[in-house]
Image 1 (cartoon, rainbow, N blue to C red):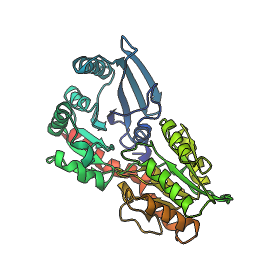
Image 2 (cartoon, rainbow, N blue to C red):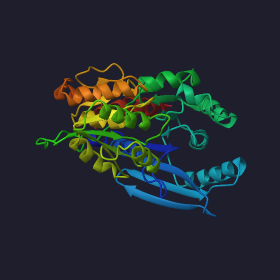
Image 3 (spheres, one colour):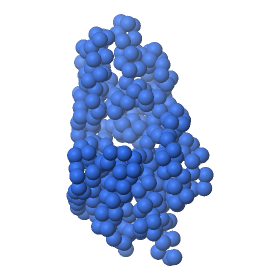
Image 4 (cartoon, helix red, strand yellow):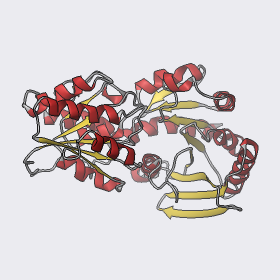
Length: 386
C-alpha cells in the first residue's frame, strides 16, 4: 500500500468544545490544524456545534478540503440550562445524521461541550478518544466546577477508551479524574514550513522582546510582564522594546501601560492571522513567556522552531529545559523576570540556536503524526478485527 494512503479509508470523527466559528475565528484554531494534519493519513470529519443567541433555527455549513470535511452546526442558544442542553442535543442529532461510517471518535477539550463526546459514542457505537488541551484541570480551577460539569466528567470517564494530553503536566493534573482510562501524551504540532529560522535575520537597533498570548490574567500574567518592564526601566535600561501580540481584546492592558508611562516601550498588535506569527517571532530578539500555568504553550514551541532565545516560567512543555535552550524565571516574580531580561540586554545569557532548533523537532508535523498513528491504529485495528 502507498504510505501516503495508509489508513485513508478509515474515518475519524472530530468533536471539540473549541473550534473556529463565524463569531470566534481564532478559537481552537490549533485543533483545526490538528484535524488537517490527521487528514493526511485518514478521512476526518469535524462536527462542531456553535450556539448563537440571534438564531431562531439551526443553520448548517459544510466545507470540504481534501480528506477533511467540516460540518458547522449553528443553533439557537437557549435562555437557561435546560433549553441550552435541548438545543445543543438537537443540533448534535442534525449534524450526526450527516456523518456516516465512523470508525473512531476524537473529542477535544472537555469543557464546556464534552457531553457531546458521550452522545457520539452511543450514536456511532465506536471507540472514543478524548484529548485535553485546556487549563480547566489546573488545581486552582478544577475546584470551582459546578455539579453539571462534574456530571459531564463522570459520564466521559465511564465511556472514554483513551485519554490524550499535550504534556506531562496536564497528564498529572487530569489523571485523578480518569483512574481507569489509559493516558498518553501527544504534543501539539508546529508547522515547520513557516516556523523556521531566517537565514539573513536583520539586526534590531534596540533589543526587541516579544510576548504572544490570550492575555488571560489568571494564567498568562500579562500584568507581571508589564511590571517587569517598569522594573527594567528603573534599572536604567531604555534600549529595548516589548511587542505584545494577542487575538483577544487588550484595551485594559493598553490603559495599564499608559497609566504607568510605558507606552514608549510596550506596544500591542492583533488580532493577526496565525500565518503572520512567524513574522513577529523572526523580528524578535527574545520571546518572553511569564505564565502561571500552561498545559503546553504552542507559542513557545513555535519560538524554539524559529531558533530564537526564550525566557519563560517552568510551565507546560517548559519544565527542566537546558538554559542554553530557554532561560527559567520564577512564576509570578516580576523582579526576577526583569533581572533576567536585563541579563539578556547585557549579553550575559548564552543560547545555542542549534540546540534550540533540535529541541523543537519533537513538535514537528512528522513526529506528532507518527505518535498519533500509533494510538489511532490500535483502535482501528481493534474495531477492524472485532
